[in-house]
Amino acid sequence: MPDLKTKAITLLASVSVLLTAGTKRTIYTVPPGYAMIPTHIVWRNASADPSGATDIDLGDGALCDTWKQSVTLTTVNDTDQFFILESNNTMYDVFDAGDVFGAYANTGAAGVTITADLFGYLIAV
Picture 1 (cartoon, one colour):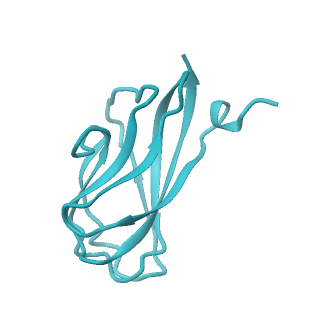
Picture 2 (cartoon, helix red, strand yellow):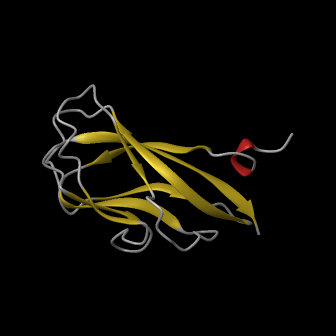
């Protein structure tokens, strides 16, 4: 049976991200033989108020800044809220096999963790 990750938009990864400034967290590594198209991220299950996280970058590279930059969680002010981050009709490069997609907190919320659910799909290359 084919893997759903190559047939539909699906959950690719679910990881806890520390929002302390200067922290980098790997969310997903693209497997060999595939490319990845991320479609959205759901931020949920914060350990405390994450609203101080006003500049989070997402993508690959040292600063994870190739997909979305300057993401702010200021509207998430409670541990039982969630926030959906979409691509908003913007052009991006495909993430290639071996690329490490992650989050980097430039301006964070010290000691706060939040779950990042990465949704998207894989393309066989």
